[in-house]
Amino acid sequence: MEEVKNYNAVVEIANKHLGKVGGDGYKDVYDPELLVAVPRYLNREAYGIEEGNLPFVGVDSWNCYEVSAITEKGQPVAGMLKIVCPANTEFHVESKSIKLYLNSLNMTPMGQTAAECIEKIETTVAKDLTELLGGDVTCTFFKNDHDAEYQFLGYQDLEGIVDLDAIEFTAFKSDASQLKIANTVSGPAVPMTVKSNLLRSNCRVTNQPDWGDVYINIEGNNIPDAASLAKYIVSHRTVSHFHEEICEMVFTHLMEAYKPEKLMVACLYTRRGGLDINPIRATHKEMIPGWFDDSSMRMKKTLRQ
Image 1: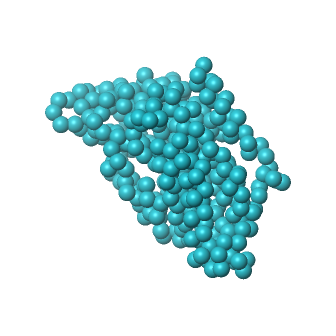
Image 2: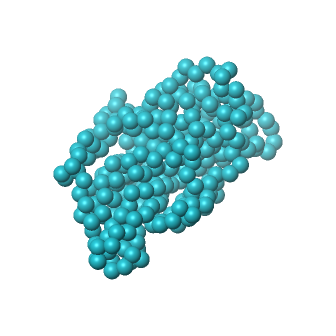
Image 3: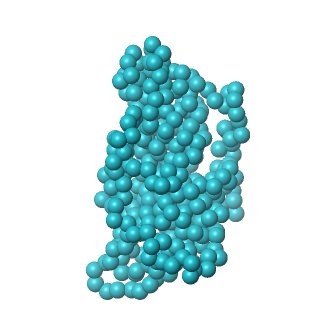
């Protein structure tokens, strides 16, 4: 019942903008009041994640592709904005609200030159989100595609090490019981790095499908069964949660099932509404690639993005 109550609370918060088009729905003059903050605890408490004692470190990395403002002379400045928000903030931002907020910059004069405009966009967005979410948010504006250089390397495709045609998939409601141990070894912890593009879930509010790639770096003595990992990832296919919540659910379930010494989970979601959302959670900060939580470093888009 607590989860149902919290779900309804999220819907009520997000409904500030959902379903509104034209008129006040799409302002093109700067308006930070468009931003909507969603309390993270509304999902975390259902999975035993304590706000003051998080079992992970991490960030939410947002790539926003429809960002533009004008100079005092009316010159348009357009590009992509990478926003990085710590996972330990009290709130995360609702996705449609940030889209509308960024749209509100479109006809807003910001500086005499293009360079001044870019700097003003970065400082304004970082300030507004820092105040809204309760943590140090950073952002960087990019004008060139060649700035995207970084990506996860060395991860095996689950589809390449498991015969998916031989598996019967029957669970589609985030079923952690699908996770099985292949074998348990003594001695040093054994690393396993896998990725999959089988991740699909639905928006918590609109129920629109969200497609993504999941990257798992796990190190411990309980070796995950690869087929069971595939079945577990597929089991999220009909659940409705925000991207950040899916990442934290996967992290929590893997910790409970395998009790690893180290774990990192990253979910890179498909662009929708002009932005893509990429949460990452890890037991140790050094497991998070430096380019992921640095707003000044762009990562290459996956096939889905």
